[in-house]
Amino acid sequence: MKPKYIFVTGGVISSLGKGLAAASLGALLEARGLTVGMQKLDPYLNVDPGTMSPFQHGEVFVTDDGAETDLDLGHYERFTHTKLSRHSNYTSGKIYDQVISKERRGDYLGGTVQVIPHITNEIKSCIRQWADNIDVAIVEIGGTVGDIESQPFLEAIRQFRNDVGPQNVLYIHLTLVPYIKTAGELKSKPTQHSVKELRQIGIQPDIILCRADRELPQDIKDKISLFCNISGDAVFTARDVDSIYECPLALHEEGVDEKVVSLLNIWTGAPRLELWREIVRKINEPSGEVTIGIVGKYIALTESYKSLNEALTHGGIANDVKVNLDYIDAEEIDGLSDEAMLKRFKHIDGFLIPGGFGTRGVEGKISAAGFARRHKIPLFGICLGMQLMVVEFARNEAGLKDANSAEFDADTKEPVFYLLKQWTSPDGSQTFTQDENSNKGGTMRLGAHPCRLSEGSFAWQAYNHKGDIAERHRHRYEFNNQFRAVLEEKGLNVTGTHLHHDLVEIIEIKDHPWYLGCQFHPEFTSKPMRPHPLFVAFIKAALKKSKSS
Ligand code: GLN
Image (cartoon, rainbow, N blue to C red; front, top):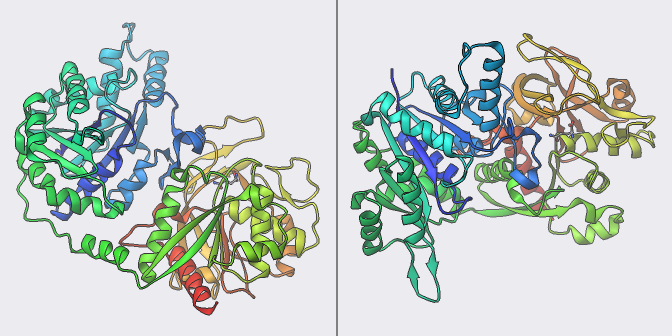
């Protein structure tokens, strides 16, 4: 089956929510009974975002097969049923890497290797290779039209229409229509310029989505239609909404999905949006609230914790409560006494220590872990968070005063976490080795790994008594089994281990309302319609705490 292709580009400024618009469109097409696939093409030169700082690029989203990808892919998985893989995100760096490898191998038979056609052909084959057995492939082009780096991608998608036939391709352009207060007017000029850039390359958008803080009046739509050479009924408002889960409904009210299927000449019935309406209703009318303290390092840029924030919201949906997020700068609480923390964190119903890299803020997170443990406040540690829960317990309960992760103190006498030098891929097909000097890109323990749960544990209860689970990883350091016996003896229970290797995946303590650390990242697989069990259980414990205090 040959899919139809929708290319989503963005103009005027970045951060307009192109990823969300694409994901929402995916959700609407699925609601019309179509099967959808999604892909993101990023013009920057990093081979993948895995080596980029969260301050620069926000969260790195990990797929089941272990690809480190753009955070928009998180939206695609949360909004649709599409299964993403390493073919779902290509950067210029990756495309060039592939082309240069081919050149070195001699694949181009002595030809001069050029942007057109070699790079553009590579881009087109990356667009084509994954899109089998689906009705519609939605491909988002990162960056803003007009950027030098995005030109080969735009050229490739321009050619694509000729390759697969005009009836099979749709171009959607998302722009900004700002409201200028002093003039009291919405301005269409930036949109006109952005579309002019696109048309210069030979792409005439079929649909223009105008991000605006209010509904566009007809005269503005008419103006955009006239100047951008597009029919009047193909200009839509993409208005600001309170919750991202309202986006599909907002676009549907505008008639976007109707226009898309009619332009692509696909017949479907009306979309079934009951589930989306129900999610939005639950978000808007919760019967209570809880406050979660996120003790982190990247708190100034909450994009860094995108999936985490969403997973917490989903945990709230499942418990019918609103989840207030209080970002706590880990550095600020380092060294605070329990008394000071009790005062400062009176309003907190549960703490979450998320993943992270590097020394900054580590001691503050350890203090928070100890505080939550001693004062029986629900605590959820993810990846680095779990590692620091173990460090705290080792230092304060097991008498291992120097306990640390080798990531933060390479010479510690008590490395409760250490650099794993060798491991095999989850399917056993590949063996990886590394040491302190290895390349940093793509070399962590990545992707979904199977894990066996201990009966009766918090985890086992959360997963509804399931014995084996699989969750996504992204980390370099591992629990050091040399210390397992002494820690277990003092009451730190290992309640989840790798199904095939001697690797610790979950730790808990018993005499506590809810204290769980996991080496994997459960936030990546949580969806509004299918909240992740650990987030559901954590919010439930926080709710219990809020009711009791
Ligand atoms: N820095 C830690 C490691 O590499 C934890 C990583 C994470 O939290 N994702 O093992």
